[in-house]
Image 1 (tube, rainbow, N blue to C red):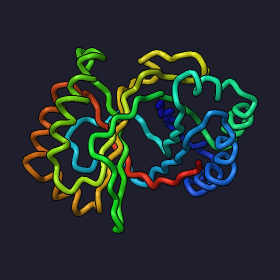
Image 2: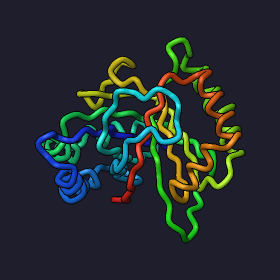
Image 3: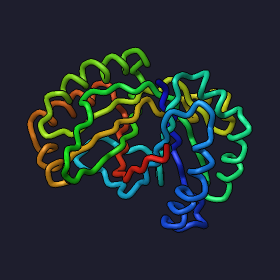
Image 4: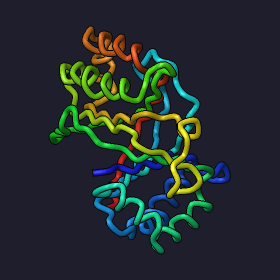
Length: 230
């Protein structure tokens, strides 16, 4: 499966509430018509603090993440080449200032288990160190780092989305790394911020973050509220 994430910056003429309303009511139904679409989520950014993380934050200033699932890259490309896509593309002008896109492989490290209680979700952009190759990044994040995260207590879910392609402007032509300098997106669920604060004060997370220094240049987290459209 391929997850296509849109990194969204709202039109500055719109308030956050107006952006959210347009995205949900107007744009969502248009994108939901894409052929081959398996699932569609909208992740609204509600907080941009660098909570619990000592790493440098990137320059990204996002208002939302779209997430569309396709069986494979070919199906994703067919969708963005379809007549249904043209309507959604035209609609972007009304509420977005810019869109960067990444196609990702999804790797579940801690299966999602929300139970019946409340929860909060954080999504985080990762950028590797300049001297770290793509292969080394994958090895450190998918193998070593994931093994650390599996030891964390009270984690409701942890998913790694590894970037395999990038787009900006043209939706069917790959963009350069310089245009979209992201290597991964984390999805992380926990019960509440108080429990997360205790987690980030623990020794196991301190050791995990120490390992992050080996391969990560920037860590840019966002708290989000998620709704499923499809």
